[in-house]
Image 1 (cartoon, helix red, strand yellow):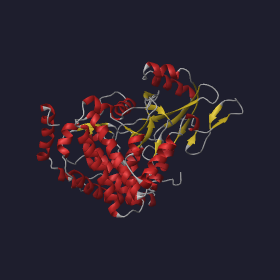
Image 2 (cartoon, helix red, strand yellow):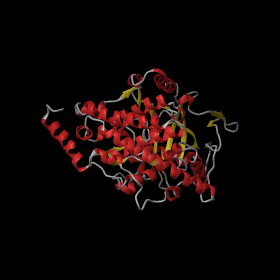
Image 3 (cartoon, one colour):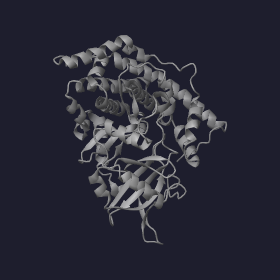
Image 4 (cartoon, one colour):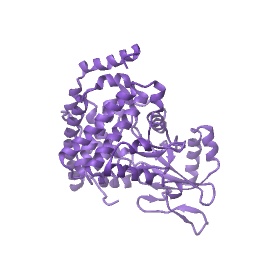
Length: 448
């Protein structure tokens, strides 16, 4: 790092930022004096969503502090906005909690581990992603009833991995940083014992998840056509929100955003059916569909069509310079991920809603964070921290960031302290949401 004068200068510039903002300053966090009402923020966000689905979102959020944190990205964005930043900017994932990482297939058919949610992506301070990751590790641990020390250890492992991987990437050439990725073999090498077995099992299940197993299909007796089997209220046909004619126009707009070879591949498929599919926690209430395309009997392709609304970060960081939120999500994902879905693209509908498209299942493997033992969460958090460091290095300056982070443990100590303080606040915010449900201000539908 020191042999190259340019790298040395960038490293020293990053190190000098410690005078402006000591790493220890990240440990301090208290709610702002004029902190917005968290329930009011969630209600405001719900106004742009499908009304009859919003109670499902609230019902999922009140299940645990971790579920609340997952759905409350807008609340944490408001809390992070007044916090100090070193000034180093990256393409933020935007919602980098521990449940938003996982396995997926690259177009070259390699199994990769990476950030996998970009609904809120926007350029901004790198600290925001790291703080959300660290806080989510502590909140997840508490939600599972783990001892206090285990949650703090998971947050520390995540942020330590972020620092170490950033410093490792800072020694590489720019193209080597861009091509860096975390594959199945590297994941297997990150842990031993039961935690390693957990990682291998999720990877193995991911390899079994493809289009033929994505959704159940049933033959329509009236037409003989295969249709997506319903599972109300989570998978339903909603002609008021999507029909094949409207989706077909949307599909053509999406197809034009793909490179020519992917457009040629999609031309082999026929759009056959579409249904609304409720997904996640924070996304519940947005217009999310699954499109069933067929190239023949037993030759399906399922694409997820997900509404892209304004990022929760925009009111604090400014609007995206891209024309549509679907394009914002896709562009951010392509910058941050080591490789992206072969059919990742965007489009809009006739009513002005923006969407992005991707495969519903293509070796996608998610981790059941709520079922992890302390050792599992520890190993997994370390993997998430490493993935986030690699993601930030693609758009930020890893050399300058390495200079700021340093070689000691000051950074992770501060982030762990922040994470514990924010976990306390999350539990109080959840109590406020539950009170709003109890007094009838908020309608919540549980069990779905």
